Length: 382
Image (cartoon, rainbow, N blue to C red; front, side):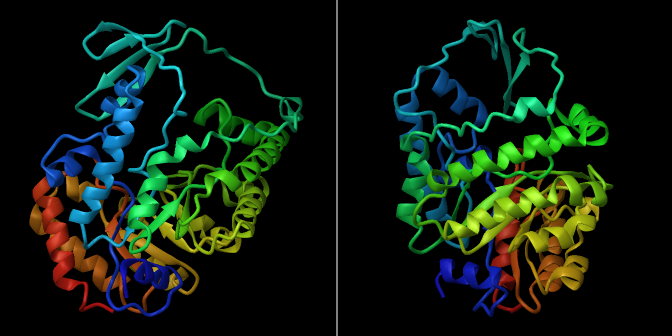
């Protein structure tokens, strides 16, 4: 089996020649160490500044070269997602070019202020005078005008990665989007609307499904082996909304979205969702999800339990806590790999990976220990 065949079989819960390995995302510090050079791959600060300064072509070429080179170095990785192959603005975009206010701080011509935190690999708008408090009603979502389709140049990096790596590796595409738990105005306001104005949430979801369905034709990229759909909708103690509320206000729209993605010719759907979603898992299966990623063990998403209760319907991808990669020892990482392989691999339907991503701040020795232990065990647990 090549990598593409191996992952396809694992997601279909069919026999594999060895356990596959996949990364949801790998951040710039680890990618740079592997390549031996600075990189834009998952460098959120550097990529944003390059776009602000009009260096889109430089960014695009750097991403195309580095994503391919990284995964050629990582020949043990069978599966990759569109996270490293970031979407870009159109080739003819107009750069924002905000004014520097000081070290790692900028202001644009609308008075919005941005702050970078290089130690956290983040850049955010910290002041927005254009933001307005608003109320929501069903009438806000009565407009059925569909969104304009994005320019194909937006997908330049992803298309390159699919073309170069796709024949051998399992490379997934994005879709037009996901509609599940819609949080209008942010988490707090959105949850209040679920409780007090469910009709507004339903109207927003109907509009969202129509618009995302229209985008699928261009967002699902040709040549991709499957798709990634993702939304975090739970905390460590359980879902953000009750199972009863999700069945009424989320499940019907999520199912419609997955059915439309299937109708576009997609065979396998990978679903990323952090937190403890066990109370919703039966509904995810009913919607048609094939592979569940982000097994947050600290939130109760224990691999053995998931395999026991849902393994007949789902492939599970993950198993090694990201917290250990960042703050644990190499011995703890190796033990976590052994535990994941022992609990996940028997019976198939399993892809090893971190519980989330190879996140910024991962200790490089821990990353190497993770790979080495996997390489030692991958043929023994099928």
